Length: 136
Image 1 (cartoon, rainbow, N blue to C red):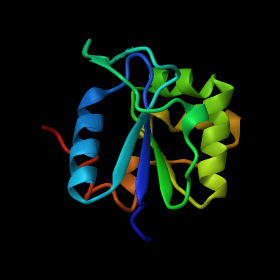
Image 2 (cartoon, rainbow, N blue to C red; image 1 turned 30 degrees about the vertical axis):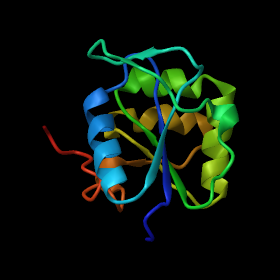
Image 3 (cartoon, helix red, strand yellow; image 1 turned 90 degrees about the vertical axis):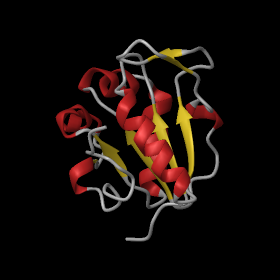
Image 4 (cartoon, rainbow, N blue to C red; image 1 turned 120 degrees about the vertical axis):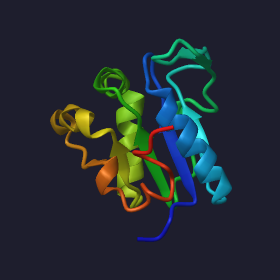
């Protein structure tokens, strides 16, 4: 599987910041464009209480060629994102464009009612290169 040119990282209140920091750092080192996608332009508080600003909202994402979409844990954050129809449409568009939807394994069941094909990061072809699953 060819490495993505771009990874969208969907963030919602309570998201797991440590995996996002590793993903962004390792992805940028590999020359992959990474964008944080939030539900609005307002700050998003991670599970550790840090506030993050998204680079884009789902409506602002245009280019999807060779793009993967990552939903960090925990399960509640992924569920919150999928309740927003714009995120659901974005996930569908990424999938239709041949991209991969990736999440924390504990959140896989959140995607089933939405009809989205998603893999847990241990089964993601680029997980090791991007530092997913590593601890500090």
